[in-house]
Image (tube, rainbow, N blue to C red; front, side):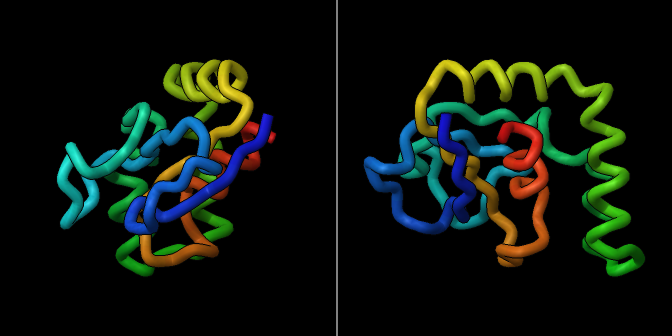
Length: 113
């Protein structure tokens, strides 16, 4: 199984394989019919409270990661994500954040690989 991470705003390519949007909120400026996603698994995204806390600048990415991993332990959507990833040889996790180095999709990728 191969897992990649990509911004939803980048064009879809065949090499993406099975495309899973892992954001709780639908990305701005993208029409659902144009998104070219196979699954929107919003329940696996960080809680609204955690996302708001992190984007307020009150914590570091390391603190965010620790809190998000704690949330994932009790999140049944993680099992669904793992199942989808096993079912498909190539999976791309899609996210909307502008920050390509500090986002929850990278944490999810680590959980899958």
